[in-house]
Length: 332
Image 1 (cartoon, helix red, strand yellow):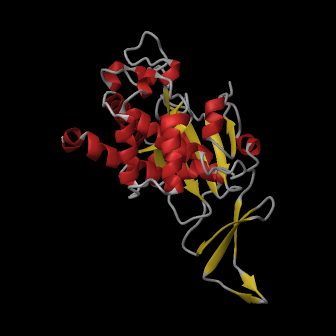
Image 2 (cartoon, one colour):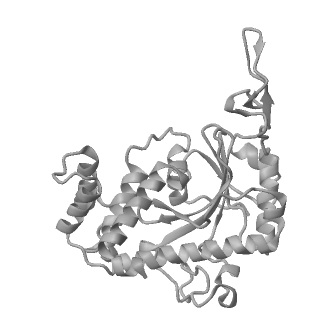
Image 3 (tube, helix red, strand yellow):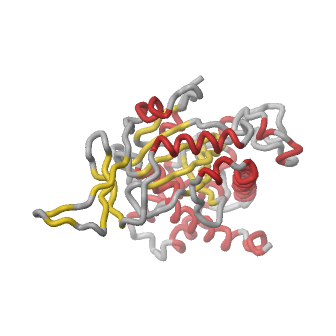
């Protein structure tokens, strides 16, 4: 059965994305996102002169430019990446599966994603994942059940690049469903190498999944802590201005954040967003998720939320709030 991309997923995976059917061939998966190409490398040439120390990376199907690199870097083809990710999921002993495939910037960035939350029997195993029994947020008989109005989806995302000199990254992205606000959670201290060994070894996959579960739980703990931390609107406004070094609230960024925080917060009527620090966090993530977003950006906003400037801005804001309002817990 093909994974059905939900409306909340569609707001997260902007650009070219498609649900994955377990029976799809790599070619069918790539065709679903208009990315059935090989990366070809050519020596750049100008007015009859060649530049052998460089290579242009091009799409084989339309010859569109992807990136420019030195001779030591070689591309891993999209079909190879699909095989590797499927091996990664298989090595998890069906704890996860490929759910979404996508590209950003016309193929310059390639990613695959697995949904961690939901009715996943393996990730609900108490013996393997502890007292919370994994991420049983959608199972009403689970200790960690959360109502749909205030639920968070967690995604494990592997992202690789053909347009930048960046290695493959593993990220957990938390997506608040009521408002489709995304927040990237770092689960590894460094980028991993997407290799056959890394993705076929059960021990390596298990380590990544364990970190993913811990990262997701850390987010859930942070969320509950922020919900339980009282904060008046005046205190929240002062925090926004202090973070942006704008004591009088004159910049457009601060004005927009304050308007969202006070009046335009999606899901602002929920009890969990009343008079607390969590309301302020959601104002920030709503700003990075929904404002200054080009609907035709080809997924650049999604990439920025995962590992770019929007992810860094959210992380800095969270660090600031934790230092300001929960310093004892941060120190512990």
